[in-house]
Structure formats: structure tokens, C-alpha cells
Length: 406
Image (cartoon, rainbow, N blue to C red; front, side, top):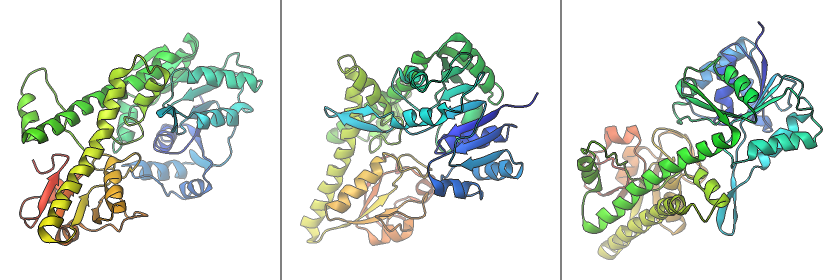
């Protein structure tokens, strides 16, 4: 039986990996994006994100004529929406902006025919999948025998392709038949279990998963600030506490970044402020941790100035939102570096996972250490773990905010 054709709307960190994975599983895939530069480069085999295996899979798909990037939607059997869902603020509370989802839905409306599947993978507030249905009805689309479902991604940057295949997936259809049809499609290329539910439950499940992780990180970050005041090594404390058979405290950091954990909890809070006290507090704790880190660095820098009579040069080790990736979205390490720079401190930045930055000149680890008076480890990159030790720091004062020195 001939495999169905697919149009993936949005070729970012989820859309592109999904496209090349499907293309290498025998589907004919058109990747649609409004960015003409991205389209041109992808058709030449040039990718715009750093993720293992994607470049190789893209070239293989192009050579087999199974993938083409386009700035136009084409008639397909399956439409997968993978566009961003940024947030705006209403009454000082971040609220999801689903304009890109709405635009994507309208862009495919005239192409939808009997038997088609429409799958939303973008992280969205509860009720967004139903809004897609309402938009299509307003666009006069006949939704009889059209299958609409929400299926959130659950992947880790740096392991996206592997996790797209092995992770369990939730499929939340607008009706049971939609859940069944879309589940059958995912079963054709993933190895994880497929759990069928309704669209609202699937939408909230994605938000709940990331809120749960945010809560756990908030506990670690709050504990780190308490330990600092009590002059206790938080990493040693966590190691001891985790000897308990039912305790697993995470490592603290400079805050929480990325476009998922740092954002998704607000989608719950904005919909039900009254009943989301714990989720909201966790977000505030994690955001406050970043300010705490900045103030801690400033205190040490100002003490250096008092003692030496000059402002110190500060090495900021790491800019990305988590270790060993190139993703700067919502990065709190980047916010620390930018804030210190804007306050007039001389900043020496090391970030081994990107080649350039529009604000900072990137230095090698050894150059940054030699040129700096104060070393601040912001991200636990593997390169730092391999090279950081007391000798390598040349007896400079070091502030470790991620456990790299422990």
C-alpha cells in the first residue's frame, strides 16, 4: 500500500527532525516554513539547528526524493503543525500566544479533503485543538471524515531523533476515531507505547509534565540558596540526601531556560490563577534564582574592586539553557552574562556549542581563564567537566552555579 503524503508546518527544533524521520521511514514529506532562507538551505542539505543525526538523515531523504522544503503548503494526506507558541503578558502573567497555530491552520484549510489527518504537536493551552476545529469550520472546511488530534512531543534537545522514535506518545483526538487513526499513523514509525485520550487531557498532560519538572528544579534551586546562607555545600548535601531510597533531588543551576519548562507552566497559571499557587511559586523561585546568581557575582566582583582597586574581568562559562546543546532560547546563563555586560563589567565568554554570538566574542576555555579574575561556571558542559580543575583555574576565584567543580 502506498504511504500517505505529509506536510509538516514549521521546520524548527521539532518540525525538522520530525520531517526527516518520517521521510526516512518511507513517507513523502513536504516541510513548509515561512522563512525563505531556511527553505533554500534545507534543500541544499544545510540545517539551521545543531542536533545529532539530522544532517545525515536530511541528505539521505533528499537523495531519495522523500523530502522537500517549501514556502508553500501542498496537498497532502497528513498535516502536522509544529509552529512556535510564544507568550505575551497579560496583567503581568505570561499567556500563551497561539497566533502561529491559527495562521498554520488557516494555511492548510483550502487543502483539506476527506480522510485527511490534522495533527497539532506545538505546546498549547488546553482547548487549542478544539479551536483548530472551529477555525476550519469558519473556513468552510467539511470536517466529515477528517481526523484531528493533539500529539505533544516529549523529546530532549541533543537526543531528539532517538527520543522521537523510542518515547511513548500521547494521542488526544477530538473523537475516538481521530485518536485511533492518528495512533495508527504514529505506530508506523515509533517504538514507544501510544496512549490514546481526548485532546484536552493530552494538552494538559504536556503542560503538567513540564510543570512537574519545574517544581523539582525549584526545590533544588531554593535549597541551593538556603545552603549558601548556611555555608553548606549544596552538592554534597544533595549527594547525601539522595542516598535515601525515595529521595531524588536534582542539581540546582542558574534558573530554568528553554522554550518548554520555562514557559509551559505559565500556560496553566494564566488559565487558572487561583488554583495554581504551587506551579506559579515554582516559576517565581526559578526566575528569582537567576537574579540571585547575578547578585552573587556582583557581590564578589565588587569585593574584588574594593580589595584591588580595579573592576575584575569575569569569565562566564556557558551560555546555552542546558548542557551540551546550542539552544539559547530563554537561557538564564545568557541572561546572567548579558546583565553583567550591561552593568559595565568586562565579560569573557566561553560557549563551545556555538560558533559566534551577536553580542559577545567567544573565547577558548584557556584564553578566558587567563584573561579573567573571577570565574563563573554557569552551564555544566562536558568540555568544562573535562578541563576544569584547580590547576586549570590558575588560582582564580571561582563561583560554581551548576556543580561542575563538585
